[in-house]
Amino acid sequence: IFINTGAEPIIPPITGIEDSRHVYTSTELLDHTHQPQRLAVIGGGYVGLEFASTYAKLGSKVTVFQRSDALFTGEDPQVAAAATQALIDQGIQIVLNANVTHIEDTDSGVLVNGDEFDAVLLATGRRPVTAGLNLEAAGVELTERGAIAVNDLLQTSVPHIWALGDVNGGPQFTYASLDDYRIVKSQLLGDGSYTRAQRKPMAYSVFMQTPLARIGMNEAEARDTGQPVAVKELPASAVPRLHVDGNTTGLLRAIVNPDTKEILGATLLCEGAPEVINLIKTAMDAGLPYTTLRDQVFTHPSVSEALNDLFNM
Image (cartoon, rainbow, N blue to C red; front, side, top):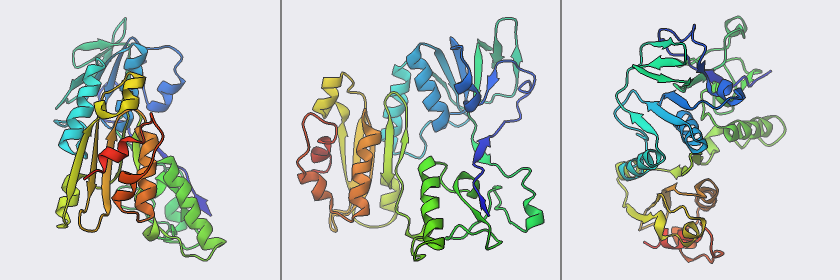
């Protein structure tokens, strides 16, 4: 038995949500055929920021309400500041330390913290879909966070029941679910050698108008390991292709061990980042030294050729 029921949006306990005609989850907003001219996004995570950036590009006036005191808290401060500024430059209003406790429909929209909007997007996280599966009757255990508990083979507490994708509490990426399939295939039809323990670090991308992509460690994480660390930072304006495309917003950072030549991580905030990050991942997975990217002959003009300068430590 294979369980791959995914995840669903978390609905926060905000008074007025259930009765409002203008509140949407990310799935519902994608199905909405009318563009809101004034959009409130509750939640400053990656899903919320992707929607905020997209709707701002389409011409909506967007306000993001974030509970914490910053966006992109998992990134290096330099990257977080640059990514936040890119959103502000799009015209997006960012309200930090925001505590939205009540919304109320009006004749012409919906009030959020005293301001009126045409629509509200709830982007406050997602949780594994397990309701209605009657897992207790089957003896399938859950984690403290409500995901189905699995081992490195993706087996649940009942060996012939497996859980794949978002429902097992792993990274909430489509490609993680695909790789879960490879793990199960290895166990059932292969030699059983591929498990979660063998999985390479995954890259991720945030598809804003200036996209953000990362693989491996950020600088703080790298320095916490105690190994030698070298960091190179490159403004997106140093990449010729981005001048050709007329979008020089962004920042690129690479982190390596200068002694072993190992690539420890990289963060790209620029046009083309979701594609180029896969080159760096491939080099990391293959155990190639960072000098391989430094010395590679890339086509010109391309965003990839920025790796020559980025890894020129």
